[in-house]
Image (cartoon, rainbow, N blue to C red; front, top):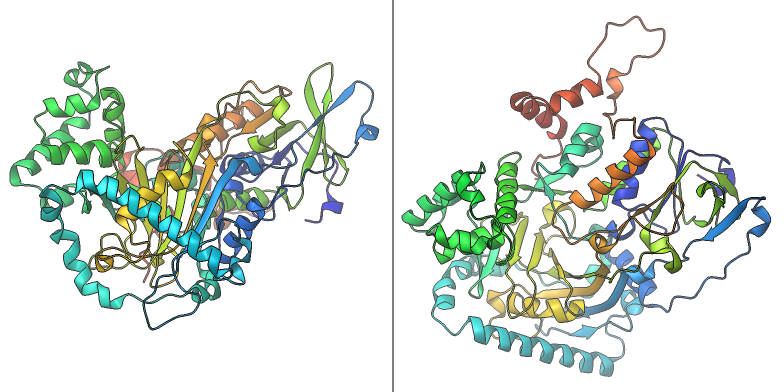
Length: 619
C-alpha cells in the first residue's frame, strides 16, 4: 500500500516483520483488530529472512558499509499539550557483526582443479561484479585463511585422530563417496551468480519440531496452507573424525550397523523407559544427565548418541532437563517421518511471510521501506496514544509492538549482549553421501577443547534452497569469539576448504559466510523504559526450535487482548456462508481446528488433511 494513503487510526501498529511480530500481526488481524505493519527494510522477516545469493551479497555490502547516523527530525510540532515524544533508533545494524566471506572457486569454469581462496571481508559488495579482483590481496588473505584452517585442523585432529578408532570408522563414510564422486559437478563463481535466484539462504538456522508450538500453531490457524514442508530425513553426528548416522527411531535402531545386538536392546529399553517419568528418574534430579546415563549401563556409543544427538544437551546438564528433552524428541518421532523435524521448502524466511499473508487477508496493512520514527506518549497515563511515521504522519493507535533493535539505547535494559556464531556454506557434496541425493540432515558436533557444541543443518536441492550439484550447510553455536574463530575449526575438519590430500573424501566448500548475530534469548523484553502499551519482540535465539518466538508472540497478544483466542482457525473459502444464503450449516475452520486438538486418532487424521499436500516428497 502506498504510504500516502495510510489511515490516521489503527488499533495496533507493529514495527518489524520478524517471526514474533508477524505472528502478533496475524493473531490481531484475525480477531478483527485494525493492524498497520511496517518495516524500514526492503524485505520481510528481518533477521529471520531468506535471501537469494545475489540479494545476500547486497545484504553483506550494506552491513559492511559504515552506517551513517540518520538526522533526527524535529517532530515537536505534532505534539499536543500533555504529550511527549520518545524517539526510536534509526538502525538495527548492531544485531549483525563480524562478517567474513571466503570464496574457494574460480570465477570461470576451468579444466584444471585449482581452488581459488578469496577473502571478501572488505570487498563483499564487489563480489557480484568481480570475485577475483585485486589478486595480491586475494592471495595473501587466502593464504592467511589456509594457514589458520590448517593450524586448527592440526590441533584438533591431533587430539582426535591419533588412535585406531578413526581408521575403524573411516570405511563407513568413504564407501559411498567412491560411487558418487564422479557425479560431482564443477561449479564456478559465475554460475553461482547466474543461478543465484535459485538459492534461498536463511540468516537463522532452525528446524520445526513436528509436535512443537510452531507446527501446532500453523495447523490450528490454517496458516500451513501457505507453505510446503519437507521431512528432515536423518540425524547425523560427528565422532572420532567421521560422520555417523544416529539411530533414533525403532526402524533405525534395528537397521543400524554401528550398534551390536546388545546395544540395540539396551537403547530400545532405555528409550521405552524414558517415555514416562518414573520415581527412578526423579531420584537423579539435580545430578548430571551424563552420570544418569552411565549408571544405566549404557556404553560410550549409546551415551554419545543420547547426550548429543537425541537430548542435544551438554554433559553437565541436569538429569531432569536431559530427560525432558529426550521425551520431547521421542514425542515428535513418527508424526510426519522417521525424525522429529520438518523444514519449510524455500527456507525459514517463508514462515514469517505466511503469517503476514494471513494478517493481510484479514485486513492488515503492510508497508516496507517505511518506519516509525517516534512515539507520542500521554504524560498522565504513560501510554502510547499515537506514532509518527518516517514521513511525518501522525497515526493514532491503542498498542505498539516493536522489534528490540529499534528501541533506543537509552530505553533498553542494560544486560550483557549474547551472540550466536553463524556460518553458511555452499558445498559440492554431502557430508555423508548415500543412495539418495535428496537428504535433509541435522548434524550434531559435540563440544571439544572448550568450544561449544555446533548444530549443522545440511539442505539438498530438494528443499529449493540451492541449485542442483550443491548443498547448503548452516552452522550455529553460542559465541565464544567471532564466528570465524568459533566455526572455522569445525569447517576445516569436516570440509575441504583449500588444496588438501583427502579432497575426494570430504565435500569441498565453494563459498562461505561467517557472521555473528544477537541472541534473542539474551534480550529482556520486560523492564524497558517504555509506556505500558508498548511491547518489545526479540530476534532469533540459539535454540533449534521456535518455542521462544511463539511463546513471546502469544504473551504479547494476550496482554493486548486478554479475552480473545490466540490465532483462531481461519475458515476455508468453501466453508464461508454469506448472508442471505439458505444453506445447511457446514463444518467451519474453527471446528476443524478444535478437532485437531482433540483425540489422538482425530488429531492424526486432521493433521494429515492439513499438511498432506505440503509434505509430499519432491520429485
